[in-house]
Image (cartoon, rainbow, N blue to C red):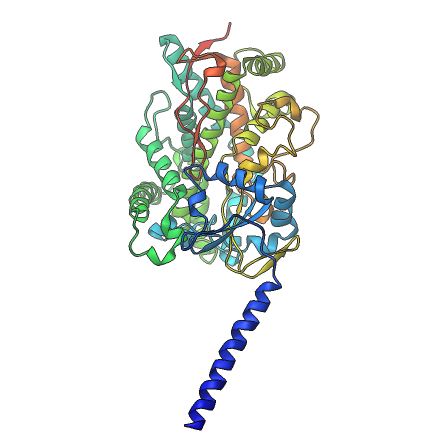
Length: 496
């Protein structure tokens, strides 16, 4: 009996000691400040249907590095350029090794094959090298300029047809169709939609559905124990959408393998990728090619078209800025001409307009979420192991301590500024920064300037609704990509 009492006493003592050590260890660590947490749900009730705006307001109260408990997940939110520089540059290694993968991306094992979501290890490095060399290199982009010129001309022809009929153009859809065909020609040497009609609606909706379902707040992401139940059906829906797009991609690849060569006999991206997978299968396999194409079509077409739509909306809302942009382009290349990529260097105000659009309407408001694999200290605060890290690029772009008149569209703010969008200036990071900066940035930058500049130089534009500039709808809807809540319908008229 005495032995039993002693044993129980020792066991209780050990348990108490362990609890004490754990408590003391936690007391020595300083978590970033944040709002009071409720039992079980933590701070989930504070997100609302527009988390980028909700978290921006919370950051004004709790600071530029803030911690929340979203269900079971500790989440650290970065809301200033200084803190973004710490995370994306100074401590990039600690914060870039892994992603916080939404449960929706478990559909068709997308997260296992996508360079966007893979851990920053050997497979990820191989895929990034393949993309940087074979898709987004300066040489490859220069070689494909004729494709982009052709697709932009087709966009202008489509708008001209609408102009002759007096019909409005759905700017986002037209830009999406142009970008989609550019990507499909770059990758597969063929159009996926008719460039002179309003086709491609189903494909656009499919891609938008993917971006929306992945960006939709999902209880499973906050309570992993619910994964098998999938209470909101998000995993089920993403499986359907991903499956349809992957099947289309597989059919296109199978068609290429059967025919053996691209149209015109010139190697395109899929030729190069298939050759690379045969010569160095350790770098890239068929699954990687399929999921890489999915990322290119979904993220590439969606973010570029959304940015162009926001740019046109802001210019319609600010007609003096539109006229100033049109005058600059007309003086440099002549009115009613399609601009080429080589012209952009001579169009500083157009570049300012694009920067200001990306500042105010960051395509991906939280960038791509990160997850720390080990405990990290940032500016005196402890970020616990396994935490999700969100960089609120939307809030950084509208930070009133950085930007004067932050909520006003003022391209002139960049006129004598050296700030750029290529990931080195953390006040402006629409494409992210550090080793995991968006690999498609070089193509996106070329496309946005050329499409926007050509539309402005060839046409004058009016809102279909006839609203005054102040009456234009500027609401957005949250998802992985930040879209306009209502599509922009604008009537083009040939410039005189």
